[in-house]
Amino acid sequence: MAATRKIRRVLTSKPTIEGAGVHLRRAFGFAEVPSFDPFLLLDDFRSGEPAQYLQGFPWHPHRGIETITYVLRGEVEHGDSMGNGGTIGAGDVQWMTAGSGIIHQEMPRGDAAGRMEGFQLWANLPASHKMMEPRYREVKAHRIPEVAAGNGVKIAVICGAIAGIRGPVRDIVTDPAYLDVTVPAKTEFVHPTPPGHTVFAYVIGGRACFCQEQATDPFGHAVEAASDCDLQRTPFVTDWTVVLFGDGGRVVVSTEEDGARFLLVSGKPIGEPVAWSGPIVMNTRAELRVAFEEYRGGTFIRRQDV
Image (cartoon, one colour):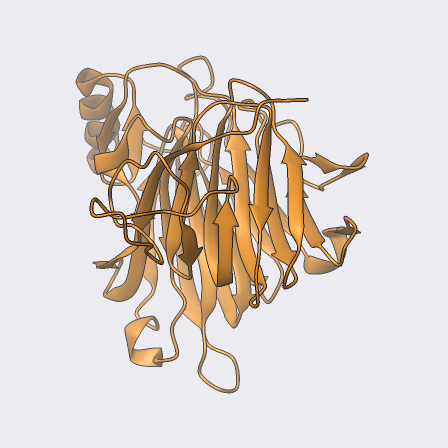
């Protein structure tokens, strides 16, 4: 039997403001490099207050990374320097490989009730691919298969494979998996993971126990979740919480009276130096300086201009 991954860290997402004034919660980011390698950042922009998200993310550059936007409610209007444009809505994904450089904008709009729900994940690119030609994929909800994994467990497969069913996003250099998992009450879910890959879960509803252990505080009292600390025992975790696993061949998740929904993400670590400033991530400070000089000088886009 494959070794069950243990918890390495549990983090509670923290409020922050990005773009032109979008209020969101950051599950992890710059301070956690390189723990989540090849992933750099996960932002949660669920909100029921239009004033907190309508300002959006006006035109800005990216280089050296991929940005993955997954919408649950509302819509995000987008456009970019390759001439792409459109709207992604509930259940849709925008998987953008910035590569050598792209300039784009993302403008959220709520649903009829004013709710906006979605997530943006940043994935790093290795040095060999940082200057690749930019690539854009818009994946509509009907193209994302939902797999029934037994015992009522449902998995939307955005990237990766479950029981031989592959998600629509493929040919990504870090071999990622991106799953939206729903586990009903009083159910155990066991999922195989590639040894050596980074794996994390982000809980977006309900309450779950990871790795079959109950967390305790330093005094031995059971706790609901831990914030920004290393654990030897796995907690029951709730909404807004990210769980980073140690190495192993599988993840075990169980629920009690409440079911749970979480994003389960994995990828092959790159293991290279990270030089990061704003929306650009390279390997050296010199490469960052070149990128920003090119942006200011109008030569950032190698193939097309906005």
